Length: 330
Length: 215
Image (cartoon, each protein chain N blue to C red):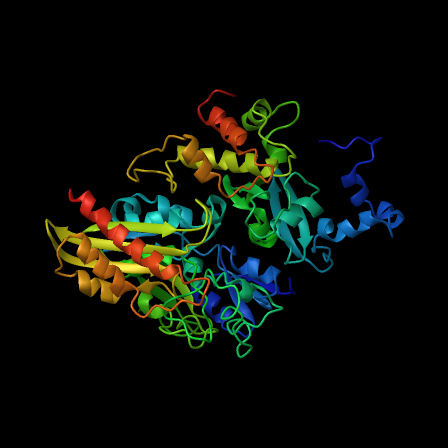
């Protein structure tokens, strides 16, 4: 680990200001940052500790939604009664990520900003455009079993590893940001991540010093929620493909649906085309298959990860058919 | 696990500079960089106040020092083990303010003022923690390297379950409390790897304690 200086931030504003200095990084749970510092992928010269800031509250919002402090741990968020009852897909997504020890330490803000687990990003002896812009992408012609099939460019085919962010994307979460100077602002989670992976070193639309202070969830959408994750082992493993879905149906008719995919792109991937296909469709297997096709339209494999395309289709169709069976059909 | 004064142990040898010099040129020395950890630069360090197993320690540490290295190399509490050093194996698990965490992924300086419980603070050879007794009864280990982490993790896990925290194995998220059956225990303990694969016995030991059969 490279040398760094350390300070404990007094409040959000001064933390953001301190983090805007060249070489400075914010640290809260540290589960991802310290991991990367140990392998010289992250080399901050100054750490701003925000773990003691009063950002660990979950509060009811006036509109019937929920405000989650950026410092709320993944474990506390998953266990919160309101989340379990009103946003069960978020609880499920969190519980299916990492290990209990990591969930006890990792925070909501940090989870959104965690870096990819692409092996070439971690390996400083290999080219990687995300780590060393302009050096090339080793995964394109390398081992790319865990890599992206949607939204990728030849600059980078790494995937965003979060489960939590996939569920939050389907829930239309908003992110509160304290900039290094000026008033706090709110940005849709959908706009936090860059749409196309053409500049892989730039993962978000945040500026230097921007501090995520919280995430707000609008009132739960009508319908049933599900989070389904497929991975290489039964627990403590990143998603090969995951889906967060909300379906609002009445009898044979689907009023509306939301579908987001994980493990397939550089960001949580909202499947807008699948949602369009489902809105107003009949609540039956043919509609689910059509939505699955729409969700993966334009998908491109790179060899080892070709399997993710049919896998994503099957998981989307399966998640949707689970709703049908829950509502007493097929 | 106490090192006898008359016994030559690996830990005793590795912990002594003179002994290290004597071993220069032998194959044993090649092991020392990994054992000694990269937190040697304490000169000009920052003050770190840790409460470990009920005792307050005022240390001066390089800010890079992880909690695990502070425990092992500075407080000589070598029960907590360094396996992967990346939060993947769980053998460094300790309780921080009663909550289980990977001590390898935590900077000691960020733990100032926190209460840390390691395996040394859970029980003693004369007065074993119920989980320690259950691991012996059920033979919940082979080589023993992962055991301190398994036991600290299990203690934290039982507390989480008592608080009603769900897991990925919990069928009904609205349930007030999940019964700790084998599937729940396996899922909740997935952050602790045992390469000897003593899992069936580890699960049996934890089940014994969580159901109140021991202690």
